[in-house]
Image 1 (cartoon, rainbow, N blue to C red):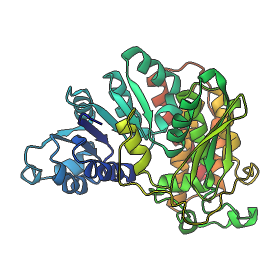
Image 2: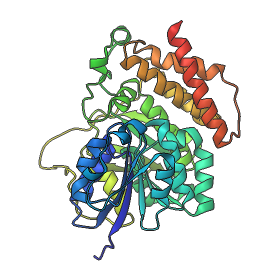
Image 3: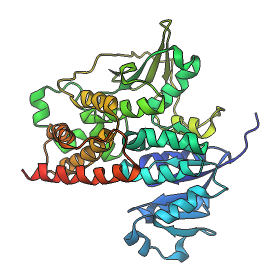
Image 4: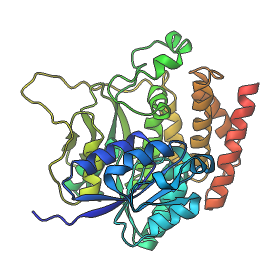
Length: 387
C-alpha cells in the first residue's frame, strides 16, 4: 500500500498527547513529518524534543518562555514564531496537511478555530473546543470544508464503530469510563479524598487536569457533550458505562440490536495514529491486545449520586448554547483550586453546578460571547472558593 507522507502541526507539543504524537511520528518510517509545534511554559523542553524532527516552525505562546530561548539553540532550519499570530501562520501554512489540536483546556479553542478556518484536517484531542462552541465549530468546518477526526480514545472508538452502519441506524452510543481511582470509594471516602489519591489513575497515564477530571468523571461529562456535536446525536442517544479494564473504548448499538465495539490496550498512540492515517490503517508502535492471556471485561452502570458530574454533563448537552462554556471554565478553575489545596474534591462538581445555575443563558452565542462567559465563570469560581 502506498501512503503519501503527511506534514503535521502539533498544537500543545509538551503535553501527553503531544508526546504520544511525536512517538507515532518517530515510528512511522517517514509517513508523518513534523512541520511545526507549539508550546507554552515548557518551550525549552519542546525545543529539545523537536531536534530529531527538524520542524520548520516552533510557536511560543508564552512571552516569558520565548524570551528565555536563545535563537541559536533552535534546531537547524527552525524559525521561532510568537503568540496567536504565530499559531495562525502555522496552521494556515499550505505545507501543513493535518493539525493535531492537543492544547489542554479552553486555551486550545483558538488554535482549533484557526485550523478549521484554514480548512485543514484537524485531529482533535482538545474536547473543550466542542464543549464550549460545538455548533459554531461544526458550522465553521462545514463552511470551510475542514475535516475533524477524533483523537480521544472514546470518540475514536465511536468513529470507527459508526462505520459499520448508517447514521440513521444508530440506536445509541455508549462511552466507556474506567471509573478512575475512586470507582469503589464510598461517599465518606470521597469527602476525604486527597490530591495524591485523585492523581493515581489505575489504567491511564495523563496530565494532572484530565486525571482529576477522570476522578470526578467530569471528563466523561465533557465527552458526552463533545459526542453530541461531533456525531450530530441527541443527548438521549449517548450513554456512559463503567469499564474498569479500559480495553473496550466505546460501543455503538444499531437499531437491529448489533453492538460494535473497538478494543485495544489503553495506549493513546493508536487513536492518534488512526486519525493521522485515516482512512488508511498502518502498522504502528501501540501495544497489542494479547488474546493468548486470560482476562475479563466488566461493565456496570455509573453511580450518578456519587459522581454527579455525569448528570450535569447530560443537562449541558441538552441545553447547548453557553452552558458548555460555563461548565468547562468552571471545572478548569475548580480543578486548579483543588490541586492547589483550596477546594475539596467533592466541591469541584458542586461549584460547577452553582456557577452554571447563576449564569445568564444564551442559546445562540458568538465566539466572543463564549470567551467572555468563560472569563466570567472563572471569576465566579474564585468567589465560590473564597466563601
